[in-house]
Amino acid sequence: MDPNSPESESAPPDDSADSSYAPSGPARTSCDLCKRMKEAVAVSSLTDYQRGNALLAVESRIKRLESVLTASGINSSPGESPAAEPEAPYDLSDRLSTLVIDEKGASHFLGASSGFSLFSPQGLQWISDRTGSDELSRFITTLTKTGIRPLSHGPSELWYTLSPSEREPLPSKHVAERLILSYFDMFNSCFPLFDREEFMELFERQYSGNPPQGTGWYACLNVVLCMGGLIEKFEIYQGLDPVFVGSTTSIDQSWQESNLMTVQALCGIAFVQQTILDPQPYLIVTAAAARLAHGMGLHRTLDEFGLSRKEIAQRRNVFWMVYLMDKSISLRIGHPSVITDNDIGVGLPPETDPDELDSNGLKKFNIFRYQAQLALVESRIYTELYSIRSRNRAISDRLRVVMYYALASFLTLFANTLQCPQDHNAESDIELMDIVSVTLAPAAAPPTPFRVAASIKLFLELRNIAAKFVRKVRSASPQPIKRSYDGYEMEQTDETPIPKDPATVSSSVPSPTIPQEMQTPDVKRRPR
Image (cartoon, rainbow, N blue to C red; front, side):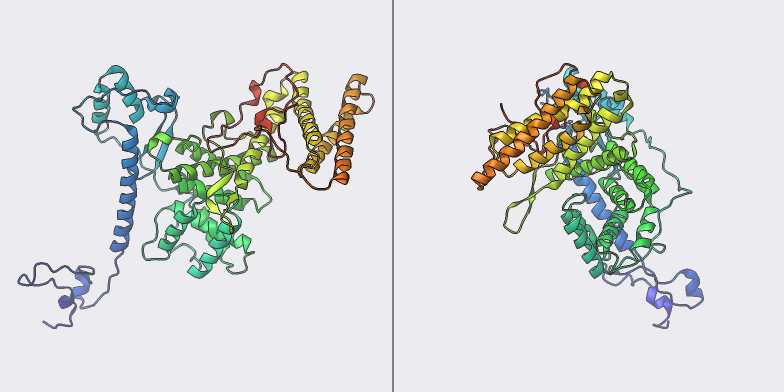
């Protein structure tokens, strides 16, 4: 046989050869038809790449399932009865809430109001603890082995995932690194949508021979490149626009993937949609991101489900990103928001990021926390002033909402200014008092009743007194003195609860102090 023929190239080794022989490449280079036609064909296989992705995915799922099984506390031996343990410190409703992770790694959250939450690992454990028997747990385990599987999603007719050959080519690695650096330095530092270390690890794999799989990652990469291009003003890569448009064709497929990266991608797409004048795409994508966030339980802390500290922090940041986007568009176009404040069980972002340090080694100021607090205020404004429920209230209640908080804040600012006029915040306090004065001034004009006009004029005079006092003290002693808050500035942590529902405030007129949940960083409570 000719040694150069195709048959000799693809022939297996002789049986007498070393049994440890294992070919490093594909087992065959030609099909049977090509062999008969005496044509040599080179075949390139992606088996190694697919095998590498599969191993990484399996490893990630095994680690996640081990954490969940450890946190669930269910005995893995079916014949043994679980020992009774003391009740967990969290409430029963939180214990019956569950985070379901399927075989593909997608997560689904079920709240306590769902009947299916009773059959979660935590619910079955609670039943076993109360009854002293694991009969129901064993029955559910047997039932889940009957082969019942959810219906698979068919191909979409309107939206479909682009194949690698149909996608617009990505920029070179050097250009992509510059765009990503611009994004993380300029945008992600204020709105921590992505974890930089995790994103860069996936980015390195993207430009290797083993790119990550899934529409969520592909959309996130294009979102970051697009926003980096917006920051760079499209000067270094003009092809970002079609790349991003190509990624948006996978939105429908992204909705079928319940993972954190899908929510991150939708948030990024919504931010890019703000560059156009039509708010409708931003509204729709934000609503989709909010629903997916609810489906993954991002609005709950879920400390008892084996999540790492890094995962909990990332879930919290993504939720507050969705929250501030939802409340912003709600107030801007007058639509009710998707997220309800009464069903939020995750704390505000910390005031300082422990993982981010400035050039001097100090913790960076976290503006993201105050963006979330501003979104809470926006939510209360819409609820108290523009919702149908607020419009159906009595006139006296509406007047109290509009006037009371402003006047109470005015008195607190006045007290702060008189107690420490040399504080650097004194001038900003005067400016805030000016805002209230401008708002109340038209109400003092005729034909306003004398009692109301006299009260409003009193507040205007208080503003003038405070301004004159500050100027007088500053001229006598220009050295600024920092204001002391005597413990009234409560330290905020990651577990700081969100404000209560404003509708539950009593209708009786309380003392004129600012409620704690209505305070902003510029308004401080002071004793009288």
